[in-house]
Length: 140
Image (cartoon, rainbow, N blue to C red):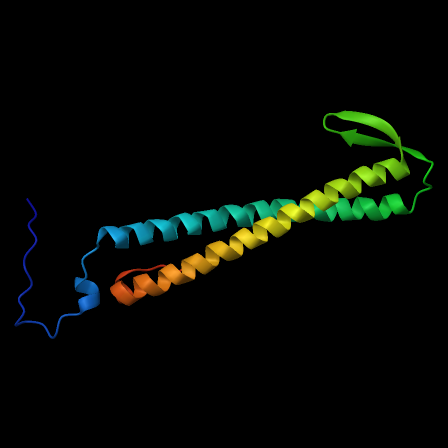
C-alpha cells in the first residue's frame, strides 16, 4: 500500500502557495472550460483547412468559367446529379456556393477568435492561482 507522507516543514524552504493550492469546484470548472475551448479550437482549425481548400477550388473554377462563352453548356454537378447548364447559370450556382463557403469561413474565424480570447482569460486566472503547477500551453 502506498501512503503519502506529510512534508516536513523544517526540511524545506518556504512553501510555494501555487503548488499548495487546493483545486476548488470553480477551478475545475475553469480548467474544463479551457479544455472545451481548446478542443473546439482544434475542430475549427480542421474545418477551416477543409473549407479553405474548397474555397480555393471554387475560386479556380470560377476563373475558368469566366473564360468560357456564356452560352456554352457544361456539365455541372448539383448534389449527386450532373446537369447540362449554360456557363452563365453554372457560374451563378458556383458564386452562390462560394459566397456560402466564405460566410462559413468568416463565422468559424470569429468563433476561433472568441475561443482563443476565452482561453486567454482562463489562462490568466489559472496561472495566477496555480503558477507552474499547471500547463495550459499548446503542444504544437
